[in-house]
Image 1 (cartoon, rainbow, N blue to C red):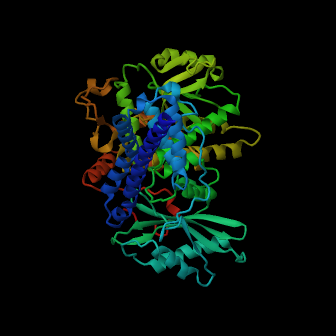
Image 2 (image 1 turned 45 degrees about the vertical axis):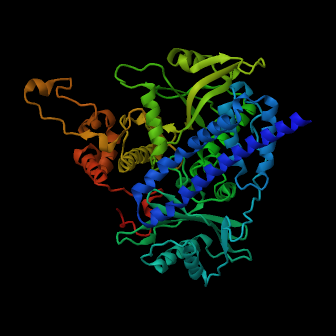
Length: 607
């Protein structure tokens, strides 16, 4: 019995060290998130951006620290499998009454798979499914902050209660006129309630953590009356005078989905019990997957874990095959999808055309840049995985041939687990939400323009779709510019249409910072030979950009050109690009709003 007791003690010590590693990670994560409030109050926008970038790296740093400690103190990689089974059981015991059990399980998986060989990635040694429920976790510490506060106004006391609700967040900067802002919010809430009788359960529930991102702070909650719930978010911004103001009242699932979009940077929010925040937010956005909510809260590793579980679940309950994704094939990425699953899988090719002077490492660097940058609703978030296995029978043969031709180094077909099941193993893959490519969206409108039996009505709808797509395309580019991003390849095929007809950029291999680009006029030809030349006769540096040349590539269609020139002619002007570059270099941080301009209480209050 004595050796068994020693083994049990060792297993417990390793489990406790892993838990210590996770607790250190979440403590640092939470501390950095909580500091966002002070940065907002002091208008430290560059500090906010820097903290958002650095926080993304926290998880991998803590996993590495913990793995090194386990190897150094316990020779963890040399321990037999019976010890690892006991480690997991002890770890489960440590999760009882833990406030972040789901995150701690994922941390355990990350550390364990870093230490053990791939052949041990089995349910005996990692958490394939959750072992501890996250339902009804409560913070029982004295004077602890609950997940949300409830307020019980009447129609007469609504304004007074809303003022108190805002004051309870203890923002250490004065409002320009809080009573005025609350009056506007109250009117918006009254409009949602209409003439409905206020029921016995009438209340406002508000998450106690403020949501910080870019230059904004958001109060998030819901208005409850009888069987009806109205999700809302109140953006709080700095005014020109340097004080605070509530900028808008966002209501309903659609507005919240835009605010929490996968195309926006992660929020900073101080959460003791993240699963309770996810549950609250999911009640407001039932169509949004839990993995995307965890991502939006900055818990990207948990988002990846849940996505992969959802993906495996979908595979078990579907029968269609992976295929080459429809649309124009890219020169850098090989893209495939599963028609029944709303995501695409992107693999970097092994070689590129001569005009693409890049490398695998450079492309991975561009995707990392996007991950760390404020995506301002215009760049899709990506999930990055290594060594992903797919059932071979689910792969279309044409897709296998395509991967063998363009990315053979990324493909392995084998019985990896030794159980007789042949897998297609992709060594490195990016996964992102599927969207309708903008070129296909516009082409569908052109094709539908003369549709029967009502040609005039079809033409009107087609023109409306073209106008909406082109206007949004220009808006997307301008938002990217405000975020210090030059897309590089601006062809329509590199942009996609997402929910609410918003346009998002998703081809990152040529992006650059605006501040690294040299925006130039096309030189005036010095003679007739240069003027008639079909080739570029002037010197072009690697970071030179000539906005005047965008037109021939983008505006060949007269309808598209007319809409574009009416709304976005400035994108063809060097002064537009150079002006934004100079302001960014001078330290200015632009406002980019995650809601439409017409929702703002005072749309003239621009930066």
